[in-house]
Every structure is written in structure tokens, then in C-alpha cells.
Amino acid sequence: MILVTFLDCEWWYLYRKKDMKIYNSKQLKILQKEFNNRFPFLKIEFFEKPHEYGVNSDESDQLDSELTVGEVRKMESVGKLTMDGTIPVGIFEKLMEDKFGLFIQVYRNSYGKWLQTWVTDIWTLEEQNNRGKVLSQKTRPSFKSENVRLSRGLS
Image 1 (cartoon, rainbow, N blue to C red):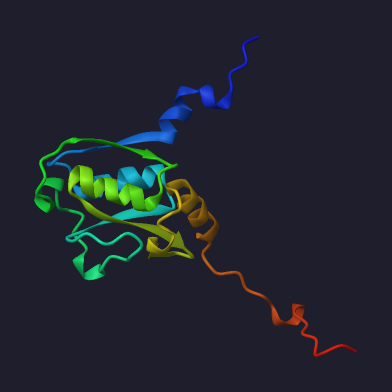
Image 2: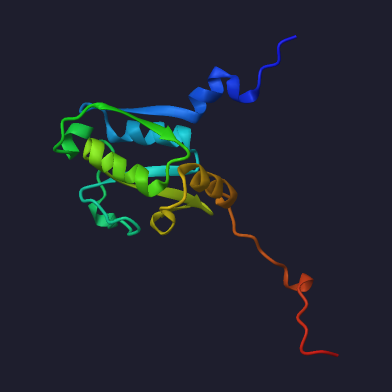
């Protein structure tokens, strides 16, 4: 009998290390879909201008996802970027800028709203995705007032 570990499976490797192929004729919305398929509780948005590490992007600079890569950048580089969950968000954003001339911001799902992750840029993509999974509930936790007792001082 042959015992195969979970990590030895080829499909597990393919899931964990998905490449994002980037070329001029590819639409931004396809890159967004590829990223979201790998990290279902995260999304990326594209912007006209870069943002500083640990600083949010100006929403008014957000680009239309119908545009192609070639329409939004000056670089001509073609290649692939591995969407490895161990990469910190800020590093992933910087790699997209330096290697492909694309200015992106990662967003995390939080109670049904998409929030820029600039405060937690040091977290890995996997950590952000896991946090998004926890926070993707439709509503925030609520506490029934009849179950909460407040005490005033010592009796």
C-alpha cells in the first residue's frame, strides 16, 4: 500500500501556486478573476497612480476593469507572477508595480463590504484571505441585551 501525503498531490500544488499571466491584450477584469479564484475573500483593483506602502489608494484613481493591461501601463514586459499565499500584500502590490507597471490595491471582504488592506499590508495574502473568510458573514455579531448583565461595583 502506498501512502501519499496531502502536500504531494499535484492538484494541491496547482491550487497553492497559481500563476497570473500578464500581457498587453489581457483585460484587467480577467486578472481580477484569476486573483479572486485563488483568494476568494480578496480582490484587486487597478489604479492610475501608485500608492505608498502602508497607505490607501485614492478611489477616484480607480481604473475601469474593461481596459486591457496595455491600455493602462507604459511598460511592455510580459510574464507571470505566482500568486503564492506566503507573499505579504504590500510586496505583492509592489511586485505588480515593479515587474509589470500595474498599480494595484488588494481589498478584503469584511461583513459584505470591500476594504483596502493598506493597514495590514504586512499580512500575507493567505492571512488576509483567511481573515476575509472569517469576516465574510452577512452581518456583524450581535449581542442580545437580555443576555448581557452589567454589574455596578461589588455587592
